[in-house]
Image 1 (cartoon, rainbow, N blue to C red):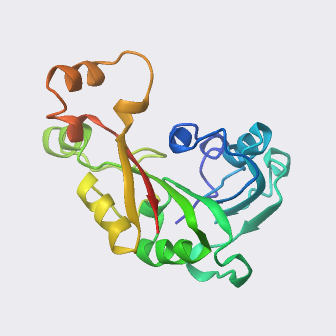
Image 2: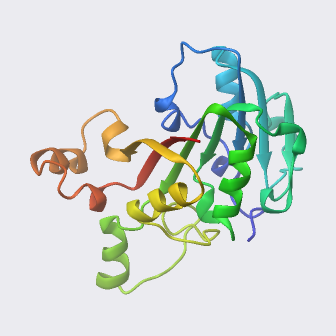
Length: 219
């Protein structure tokens, strides 16, 4: 997987969509983000006072743009699949996995590892793309095109593809209990054709209209 060639804006993104599950009244939390990129989301939580300690892990270190990294308590560069941190066992209140698991060879192994680092009353927040989205059918079966892209559903660094059911099963089979599941169209503000269709069909076609799913889970 080549992350070096990706545009730098691929890594600059505060994931407020995933944070919808957080109670921002809670403060002084210890937060780990796997796939932290430049640390924008963790820094946002630090600025809000939600995170007392923010630790980011990312497979790619952008040595050409060191100034883009936000000041966190600790930044670790490397492949989480081959790393272990016994000092962080039962340590974090929140663990974030924003669109990360689909990039991994062994996502279940990483979730099991994350479970070790999570406190007994901690929360795991996961987002993953939904390959059942109608654009997949259109691209492959109508256009006859399976070309990979810089980002999105057909990101060329994706190792695996998931539907909603598979995402839920991955989390459950890794030893977590799912507390909430939300689709992208249910959390984004504003009007869109997908949102209108989902409303008038009472959610019947939600899995074909949602690009992502967001999961809140605990031990």
